[in-house]
Image 1: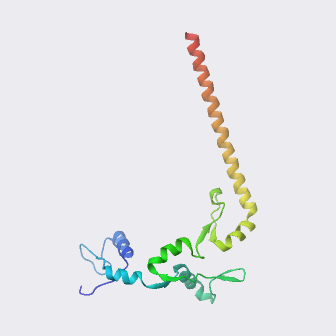
Image 2: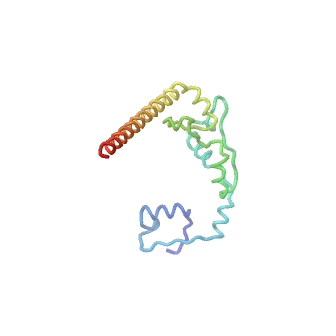
Image 3: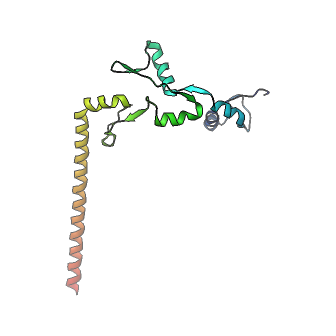
Length: 167
């Protein structure tokens, strides 16, 4: 093999781990090396937000631009270096999904931040029901713990009485 193949390090590691073979041709002891100047060049490339890219792929067949919130399109206009993508995705991307405030009560809905208020308003009864279910469960747990405590206290009293009778 005389040609050099350039592949993403994480993708290559994952492929080798999952397949235990070289992705180019079968041979033993597949190795790769990190070329630091190439890594620097790649990290300095300017890219758009991957979520925006994915959104455009999903909506391109329907002639839409972005996802809509009411009459307003939600578009992430990030254009930056690859090395800054992680920070953007975790902190400032408008297309980042957020969990419903009632996740701890078993609401599994997630959406873009702009859509959360609509979800909260339109699902008040379901959220109230989830909270009441959790509340009832907590009450049962408290009652069970109180019963255990009372049984322990009763056993302790019986043991004290038994000791006093033998003395």
